[in-house]
Length: 256
Image (cartoon, rainbow, N blue to C red; front, side):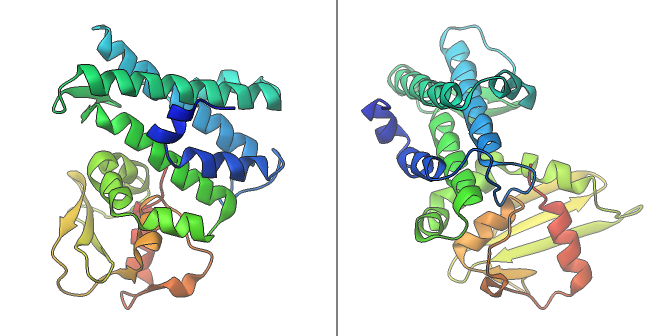
């Protein structure tokens, strides 16, 4: 059993945990390189690192965010040991975020992967990870679609994660000297998300909906696209942009 406060701070935890428990650890997922066990290893490492970085800031001894090799020790664990580690790391993250909410001013910044974020980012980012990687397990069930549709989920992806999401994909674009790519992701009734890449780097932000969209979709699909995922039903997105623009957008939005 996990502590009840975990479900209060991370309300998506229970749905993720249930999805894991319904599947064999060696089952495949929508993240093609990962099994269910790999997803759980990743989530355990996420919870540990988010707690470690925030706790270090609270202690007045800031640390740099480690890379994904932080997950390596969990690969040596048995499946029951891994599950126990996951619940423990989530409980630790909950404790640290509760302390931060009590002891830090809301505008206090903490460094995460080389960029400043607020203390509230740490629980919210774990919530996003739980939503996204639950989708990797279940695909487009109603719980996944409802969670991905939440406006905060898209906003966190754009504002709080943003450019790191584009870093990997931009390396795969062959723009040439002076080349530039701009793509628009549109969900009717909301602002567009505009992504760009050129010789100076990448950008991602909200902008008024104007002109043609590269892809138009529902909000859940748009959140998936930002993370390099695809809905099971391709008819949920639409485009008149043409193959070259779609290919460039897909490359830029390759995800982690």
